[in-house]
Length: 437
Image (cartoon, rainbow, N blue to C red; front, top):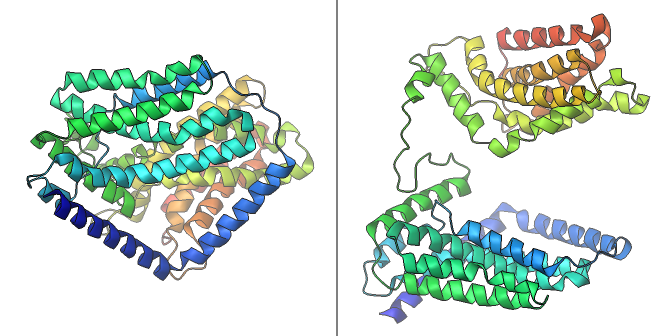
């Protein structure tokens, strides 16, 4: 039964590769990608020839400890890694070993990551030849982490203590690098092969229905992420987590529901929001009122606009036209959650810079209000249409530069307190002005 299964999987993979290749050819991105790859290689070779600082090899024991910790943390993951489609779900009902069926999604995730690790390892070896132990171990560490992550989550759901103990024992193998630098790639290879054999032994028996259900939910999440759609806000088994406070915060009216929807949009980008702290500090440091060089002072608002523009993606989605809300209410529902979160983070960064002596209280107040003004302008501008000469990135840059220009122009009037008042006025006018996007 295994030979027909391998043929079916081989045909499936070949069709998938052919379909992806045809999509790439039809999109016209192959030539541009080849041009960009050649340009990047030329740049890297130039840097490699002109700028290679002599850097001593790191302590092998430190590398081994970091690698072991990396594997150990992967073994305690809570969400499944592999997703099962409809075809794989049907193949699990056949009288074949389940690991043959699970091998296809594993290879789909393992091969690209190991190739990326191999490319990074080659680049690291070419740049710093003394780092060869880490360069050799990098693809094996990447592949072993993925297998450990998948195996740790599945064995925890099933309650297989033997597999968990074996996985933890294999995860500490990189600690042998403290004996000799060459022990790190050897230990990584042994750990990778050991986790692969442990993974195969685990999937030889019957597959519990809970693991199949979790893998199907993960396949839906991966497909949504691949297509750029909103990822399902569910647990590993497809159920929503209990939220007893959701209805109270969400409210019952259309405006409250729209604000809640925009708040969920903001919550999907926690990593991006952390960048608001240094941006808030730079808003104070780049202020022309601090006596910067005249050339830098003139370019500072545009530089701040470039830094603030990526953060403006927290603007909430457009409110459906069927809801009984006025134009300013629709924009306020889009702006309110992002303005509150970004304003608090930018204000915190500006306050830290002011405490270090780089700004004043008026600049901190301006940093608190800059995201609100920028998001209000962006909500009024709307989105770039398919036939427009502009783009969403240009609109975000324009909306982010406007409050910086207002602050630069009015930063010296009334002790700097005219700038926050002007930002309030700009945001209010943008929210209440009819028309726009």
